[in-house]
Length: 459
Picture 1 (cartoon, helix red, strand yellow):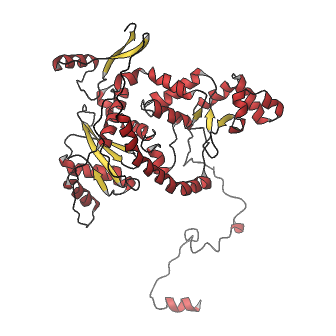
Picture 2 (cartoon, rainbow, N blue to C red):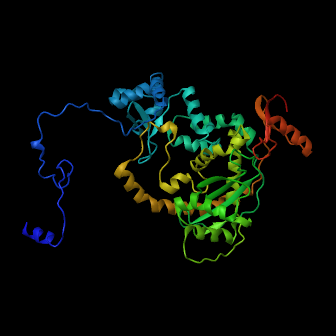
Picture 3 (tube, helix red, strand yellow):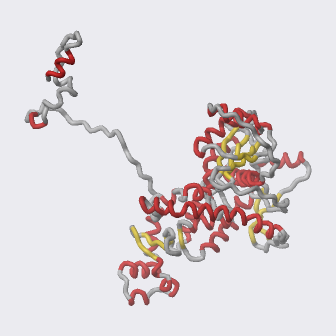
C-alpha cells in the first residue's frame, strides 16, 4: 500500500466516485458469489438462439434398409452377422458364404470391404429402382457430369457394392440418350510429345481459353480453364471475350494463387494474354518487389485441350437455356475433379487431399477414417501416393502410344437398338437453319452433335 501511495503522490489527480456495479474490474474481488441476495428481482428469462446447426439428410438409406427385408439372401446374411453360428453360415448362398468375413453392419446398413484397410462400401440389394436412383445421382445429375463408362463405374464402386456392377453401369450408359447426343466420336490423334512430369501438385499448371459461347447474363462469352499437370485438377472461370492480361492475372490470383500458391511453370498457347505481360501483371497485383523474366518454350498443351473437350461435352448435356451456361460451371468442375483420371488412376480431389468429397448420396454414410486415424493414414500415405502418381504419369505416354497404334474398328450396330443418327450438313446455310430449329441461339459450342434417336430396324 505504501508503494502505491508513493507512486500516486507524483501525480496531481482528482478522485471521482464510481459505483461498484459499474466498476466491475476493480470491484470484482469484493463481490463474491455467495454474497449475492437470495431473493432476486422478478425478471423473465429470454432464450435467444444465436447459433443453429442444420444437418441435411436423404431418404436413400431408409429405402435401402427397407429393401433389405425384401431380399431373402441379404436377410440370411444379416441374421448371420448379428448372431454368427455354423447353422446360419450353412444357410447362406455360396457367394455370401465364401466372403462372409468381408461384410459388416452399422446403423442397420450392411457394408462390404474388398480388401483389408479398404473403405467399406454400402451393400445395395437387388432392387432395380434403387440402382437407377444411384446411377442418376452418379451419372445424370450435374455433379455426375454424364461421364463415361469407366469413370462412372469407378465412382459408383467407391461408395456402393452390388453384384454385376460393371454390366449394369455399361448397360445404363449405353442407353443414355444425352451421352449419345452430346459426345463426339473418338478420332485419330497426333503423335504424343509428353511434357516433363512435375514433382508435386500445382507446381506446373496449364491454362487455356474456350471462347465462342453465347453471352450469359453477366456478359461472359468464354471460360478460362486451369489444369494442374500433376493431379489433373481443373478450375473453371467464366470470362468476357474482352479480358486483358491484367484481367487474367486477377482471375489467376483469385482462383489459383489464393488456394494453391504460385506455380513454378505455366504452360499455355501463344495467346497474347499469356505472354510475359501476364506474369508482370501477376507480380504487380501481388505487390512484390521481385523482378522476373520469362523464358518461352514452344510446348504442346494437349492436356488442357482435352479438358476443354470434356467441359464442352458436359455443358451440352445440361444447358437448356444458352444464357445460363455459366451457372453450371461449379458442377462441371466438381464432376471433372471427382472422376478418376487415367493418367494418375485417382481422382484429382484424392491426389490433392487424399480424401474423396462428400456427395448428396453420402450425407448419412460415415464409413471412412476420421480423427487421428485419418491424420496418421495421410501422413503415412502422402509420400508413397505421390511417388506412385508420378510413376503412373511417366508410364501413361507409353501405354497410350501402344494403344494409339491400333486402328479403331468400325462399330456396327445391331437391329432393334435405339441409336443416335448423326446429322452432318455440308452447306453452312442449311446447317444454321437446322440449328435454329433446335435452339434460339445459333451457336455451335453448346449444340448437340447428333440431333435425334431412332429405332434401327434394318442394316
